[in-house]
Image (cartoon, rainbow, N blue to C red; front, side):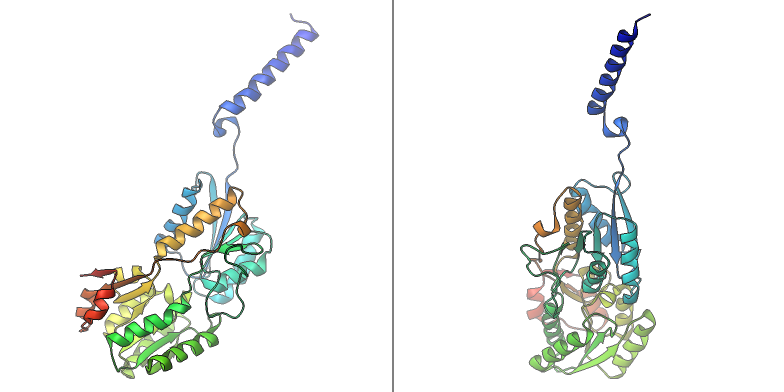
Length: 332
């Protein structure tokens, strides 16, 4: 039998072999790696397509849910008042990054819940808010970065397109009185109407139960078209809006192309898929060591005008040739 010195040498040799194996074996074999954990705070209900886009962006940065990533989902189901507690709950879960989806309100809720956990927002600024969420797009301060959608600034262009579709007619505007900066948004839309010399008729909606009465009211006032406010509850609720517009046979501007692909008439916006992939990729980069301040807030460079001619035919609307010429895609 080996002596004490021999046994000590054998022990050291054994430990050396184990340590060396840890460096050459796959991580799963050498030791159990703990998956990274992030949170997703969303104002609207879950949307399979949008969630898939975010996951794709994460995978581009090396993270796949179920493999090396856990995502804690929190959905406010369209209720702005629920966002603060949902954000606080994500902080209690010790997530490493919070992705927000649902406009400025979701970003602000996350910012109030934490000043240290990185936040990647799908809309970290907008042209019509008085208090920007970051001071500099090129190098954001603090713990916030993401995408600036500038959807409010597109309202005037959307209103102008509707005025071209139904010249001389009043246009109904759906607005959510519980939305962030509601009064400022209404004042801006009213100014757009005066500039374009278009009569506007307003209807307030903040829940699904308000939608049908609002459409019935606007139809009863013989509006020529309907423009939903560019805010998350209305923008993400196109599955309810499209059938109502079809039922009342009234032209309606959609915020996202997905709504037009599902039967809506017309949309003008940046590609929503790009937004999801971008915030997912940014979250992955932060998990890889990047700091929010080093990731500039990015704005879309492409805006798509999508028109559904089949829907136009169904509601008895002829799309002017001048509008068709500007379309990026026409669905027939």
